[in-house]
Length: 197
Image (tube, rainbow, N blue to C red; front, side, top):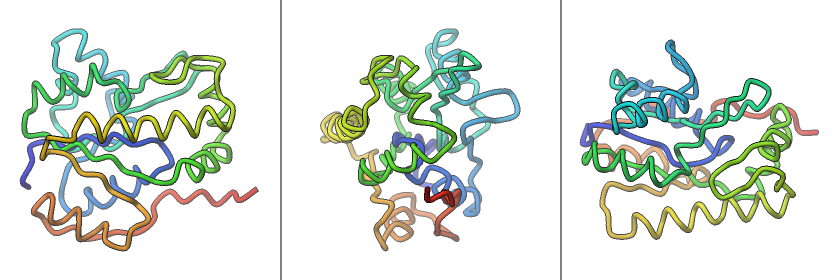
């Protein structure tokens, strides 16, 4: 692979599980949401606070495909994919890390969040970069998602270790293969939200 690490910057319900499966089936070691020693988001912040390297406690993995965890009832609320203090620290400690912004229209993400275990309500209860606790109307969430896309594109505008990946594109497999310089052996839809109500 062309890069030492991969870190996914996008939101839950925007293709993170699909990216995880595609990379895993292509021979890479992936950390998605939770691993044997805990939730990825907590491990990232614990490592950053203890060592300055957010990925120190995930060193066995090539890719972090979903770092966020939002479980207010368990007092867990970590969003490293939205926290540019963490993103900058990853870039400083891992100069050959590829950052992937997996994009999906904000209204589609909102629709999925509302149908996935009350995720929109969990977001409203939580203090999240760009979205204070108590703020969580449909408009707020759409704006929050779109703002993150804009900030990522601005932050990485002059960097080559960045890939904006439209998960609805028919070209995802080819684009990812070319960027990583490996064969992506599978691409499809993983973790599809079957609840259409």
